[in-house]
Amino acid sequence: MFRRVEDVKTIWAQEAEKTLAVFDAIPDAAAHQAVDAHHRDLRRLAWHLVETVLELPQNLGLRVKGPVALGPDGFIAAPPPTMAEIAAAYRAVSDSLLDHLGSWSNTELGRSFSLYGESWTGAYAFYVLVAHQTHHRAQMTVLMRQAGLKPPALYGPTKEGWAGLGLDAPNV
Image (cartoon, rainbow, N blue to C red):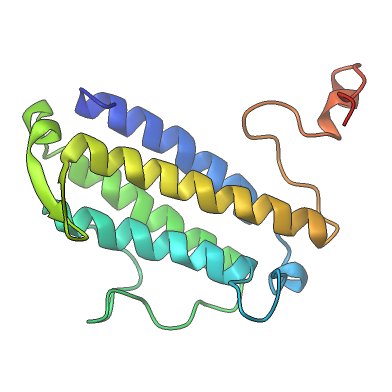
């Protein structure tokens, strides 16, 4: 759990770069990849992460800004057509989040906030924001493989990355 705002900022910055690496590895031609027509495709999953970085911190009093704004329903209209535009929007809202976190003290991490019908501390809210992003990024890497793409290494080598280290990939 987070105890210092500087730790939140450090982890967020690292995780945001991993998210952008996933976005950058998705060509527009593959952004339609989904499990089926009833699930989000890669483009919509990426856009959902932009929405969440705008929405969740607002419940903590942090008015994150970006090139798009949330509608009254808490969502943004349709995602832009290209992954590059989504990545640019994500970078903008992520940078804004980091800027707004500069106004927080460590005390805010222990303060209780009402989120989604529950009482969360600021620290827990940021844990959830990071975990939520990681969860959707993992979904995206599976969809990328289904689309024939190679996901980037995020927390160690991918299956293909072992060879670059001169090692055999682990057996599956």
